[in-house]
Image (cartoon, rainbow, N blue to C red):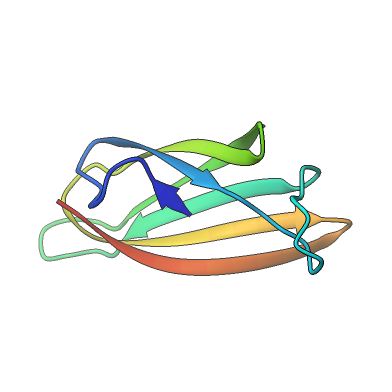
Length: 94
């Protein structure tokens, strides 16, 4: 997953996901969903969001609205041919 800014900010952030198969060929027939969350903190409930990435060219694109700075957990769920794989990341928004 690649963010349009490094580091991501507490705002809307465009992201791109490129998927390749075992032979290194770009995959264009998957369903890609991105779930992002921030755990509960003192005085604040947990925040949980999800979005579907849309294929544009060779990349699946989405916008993640990170509502505040801090550590966010991301799960990229890729479904293809009835099988789902999940990759997990943590990003710090400024």
